[in-house]
Image 1 (cartoon, rainbow, N blue to C red):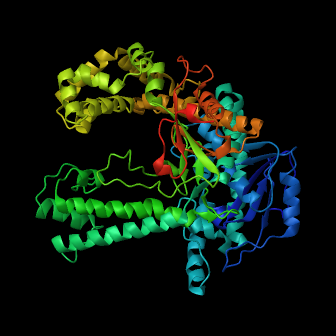
Image 2: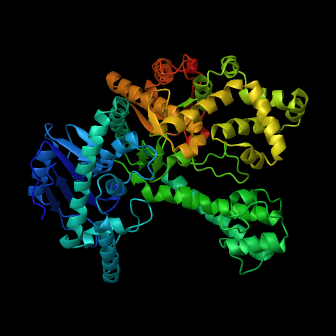
Image 3: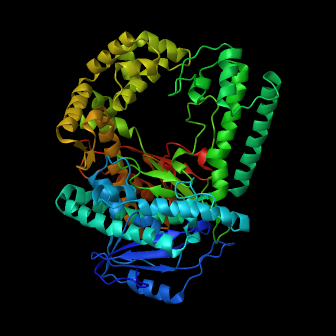
Length: 623
């Protein structure tokens, strides 16, 4: 039986169970569990109002937890500490002192794990069964049906955005909840024992683990600040997209039939490939003719274009605007704010990912390659009295690749300000063809050269290249050889990186961070090097920029990181040329980890809306 208090110890594993995942819209913790290295567990549980889903706090518990969490002499160990620390903050409890995180430790030590979730890790590394989770899920599913019949306010979405069972664990009795809640802190403390030893024996991994802990403070500030959106524009966009859906439905029903369901792959497939007789160019994994976006985009038919327009409008609502509407909250100034969940070690390369909502995939109609573009950035704007400064690494992947491969030809082109892909196109297909395309307003050869570069980067071989470029394998092979002739270091570098993976099971970024790669998938290694080095670049930059804002006491805040771009919200009257150039310099400084002098950064300004970004800011025009 767990104690009804926090166990004694200098190192304590901690966890919370909550009524949801988004504290800004009301989710709160109702169950708090603790475990010391000796395996002694304790917990507090609060009742939850079944109609409001609000936990009913017990003051004595809060006082004890405040004493514990604010005691800087005690090390607190979490798995995904950001989530629990945030939930505790919304309960009025601040976490002080040293924090350890088994999620960061696992990601640093073993980047190639299939999952870094707590239970699979504990099952693999310490042999801790996950039976408690399965038993609890079954019980909560049963209780949810009863609660729904009573009219109780049951959860709609879980931490994964889909499964709501975990948000309704408050329905379960202690008999089912205690083994799960206390089991999680037992798992966490056992994992920490394993990972702490591994980190102590690997100084390189320890170095980057510590960086993730420092960076998390920046991430949490970024999320807490949030991003402003205009509620009325979101509502208007949803209305417009719904009108577009209805327009398309009428046309499709008139052309195909009243019973036609555009969301039925079987009906869509039957119409396109049987009624229209279009050739099948793409297939699903199950061997059926594909009707995905790529397949539809290649079909030149007026009714199919209407179908694409219909699907684009539905996607605009479900993927973007409805999510903005569901997660935006009013702040004290009367602005609608999104507080996204940024995961600073999302993919294996260590790059940021984002959810609730995902701002990194907020479509920009100006840059999308889709023939039915979605502009999902219209509602986003700076707060009143502020502007956004966008600092974007220009051609970052090419610079990193050229630097890592010691590619003299690439570097010369980059230093001279030439277009690398145009150079490649002229070398492979000739000046006459490229010039003719330029006169005709086409960039076919350049586009192919760009595809070749990124295809190589992502480990494509000639078979994949041929399919990607829709050409015979012999042509893909010949073009690939020509590309390697122009940039000979490319092939040498790729071979070296892949051989390194086969020999030692990991590669190291330019920063020296290890990224583990299965030797059977060594073709991914080059991409991991480039993407991983890019992750190191942006993470160090975020720490430096944020520290400088604090040192100078500037009313300036990082509000988004979009792949290789930082978006800073700064009070309008503070954005001077000196400030803008200082931000650029802080981002361009790679601390000597690359051979090139700096990674160039382009600045852009947003004064009204994100989709109206003023590219290539001339800082001399600032005060």
